Length: 198
Image (tube, one colour):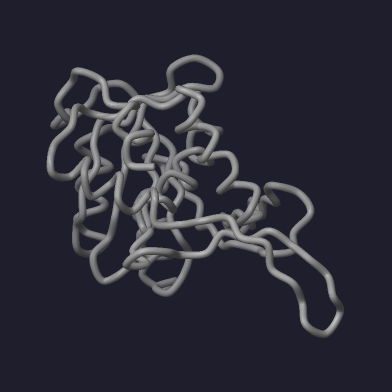
């Protein structure tokens, strides 16, 4: 629910930069969604910035401005542009591409050589759900962007699906509402990016 997300709001406005090493999650579409956060203990985080931006140049500028040391970005549909961004960030931050796997048994498989995470979609969505509901995430105080963030985080639901051929049943997250759920994916990627933040 939107109120669950708003319950994560702290008293701080969004920051405009950071000298502390941060983590970033970005969902790349025609208009990218990006969240930047700080690690707060073992399992908690504080999002200090969120925005909708265009292109990888804007993403690069934010990484520099916010001292991003670890980032996870969706690998597709713009893999070639992502690869250029990944190379550009080399030496500045550890950047991984991410791709979802519906039937992967483990939460995460890492290909260090190609810089790609394969992620169990259902499991990572479960994690961000419990992150929000469990009080492990702080976000900036309520503003227009936080309202968009809340809407998109809530635009997904876990449903039980049955395979017509085999009869197998499996839970999957599917878009609901206006189907814009991009900020939810940025949360998934932020959790992964925080794993590499010391």
